[in-house]
Image (cartoon, rainbow, N blue to C red; front, side):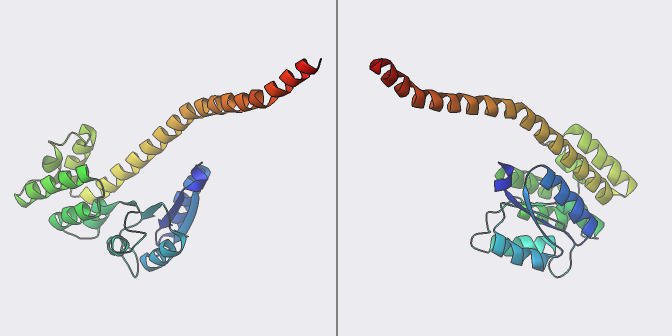
Length: 213
């Protein structure tokens, strides 16, 4: 079933492309790759993926510029894009305020857009990102503590990317667990359907045979 979902992985680091692609292929997804934003846009136009996973800092087109082009292109404007946006931008020297605004712009979820709107207002008022996120129930307390530690140590971007990696691993584990729970139900359902079809085909034969005898 996963093979029907085509995912585009884009990064200018070959080992990252290899690792991410391997994990996705092992999970049963069809994977296509690109090594920069410009190639990713061309591949997306040709292959029409259902999901795009991209880095932020890449040659020719950055991840954000790629998102901007995708959003203005028919047939690709609604394709979900996963990008470690804020942490990568902070590590690249983008200011916190600008990073929050850009993160909001690439979010497709309305609830998260509203959240980043609120965060943006609080950051503009001079609050730290961990304080700005503290009142939002969508952010785990453990993540807030890590962000606070990152701000105090001056390594916020690095901490954010570590948090992103942890969340991705947790999501991967949850998906595997959910799949293992769903598979027996699917097999049982298919068994019932096939059994019903077999009975529907054989019962008339048994009825005719009985009538003849």
